[in-house]
Image (cartoon, rainbow, N blue to C red; front, side):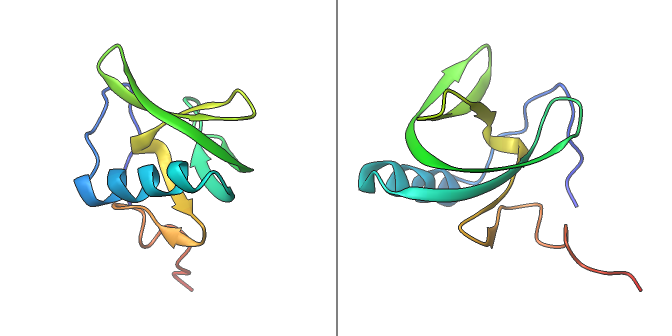
Amino acid sequence: MKETSDVYQPVDTSFREELLTYAKKRKYVSIQYLTDIREYMSARAIIKEIRADEGAELLLLNTGEEIRLDRIIRVEGKPAPGFEDYFACAC
């Protein structure tokens, strides 16, 4: 599982392209992500755009939320790169 930090970790190009595809469709998508204090959040929103800000890429939602791409855990049930085992049970 990927560690979140203050230093932005660039995401895989194919994942970024997938997010842009959702943005072009203008449909609601479910997104799970971690905040800057490692709080797990879930949203259902329309992706407006991806933009760069202070060395990090941000996903802008129609709800006003801004999510760093490297903190996204899942989009539409599909794990983001680095978070494939996030929900795995080590029982």
